[in-house]
Image (cartoon, rainbow, N blue to C red; front, side, top):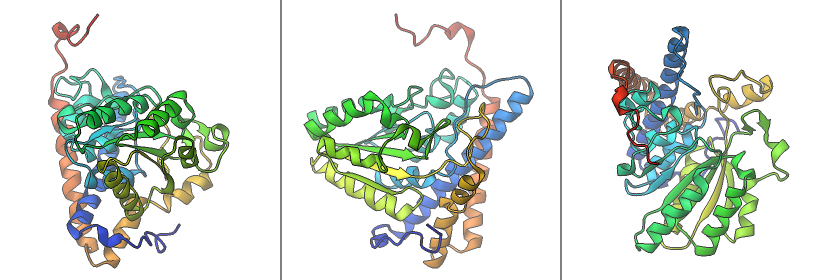
Length: 334
């Protein structure tokens, strides 16, 4: 889909002008955070300081930003190992996230978790998981809790196309369908499970077709189209809050960079170039231009402000102390 044909969603008026600007700002924040994190990792690697794997989500910003515009603070979010965007969109602080990436005591997991483990239950951020599909069944528990307490809280669980081939995926959807839980499963299908192309691990065209086996609705959508993602997710949230059960949404998208910092690029160049031409940020910028919401100068200023915010976060993290060696056994239970 080209930018000219981008977002033909009839319900684009569903999103207020203010919300559209906030979504663009969040997309900028996610992109700039990822750019800065790669630069920071490379600088530390050059000094002989290996910080572990870094899984960036450049190219997938439309999904997380749309979620952030809809979800409430008390709703639950389970992320993947590629979860920086989800965390930021749920309200995580860039400074504390950068501190965690550097293993600093001020980080979200006290410097013990790194890139894949950002947690903050106070804002409903239930964290990332180094296990592929590890959040799928955990989300069942959070959704069951909300149902049991008779709240209208909703749980969302992000996972990749590779996780859709695990047993946990089927167990989780079976429970969600059986008990009509207020949980939304979002498959961020970026076509590659690390180095495995989707057609090597999935025998069907749309992962969302698997929802039918568990009596829940399933939809496959363009994950780079803000309006379509927002509309689809909003419908699922309304349904879940009303006690009408779960939804499976497959967002077809593409990460702009290799699986992680320690693996080389392996995807076909023509495939990558085709998806780069559908960059969700560029396309959404053009839509806001067409709607006379933000001119280029205003967009550039907004992005600069976000870039400055991220630079402050990096500076803060670099100056934070490492965990004290005397705390080595803290937070460990036998």
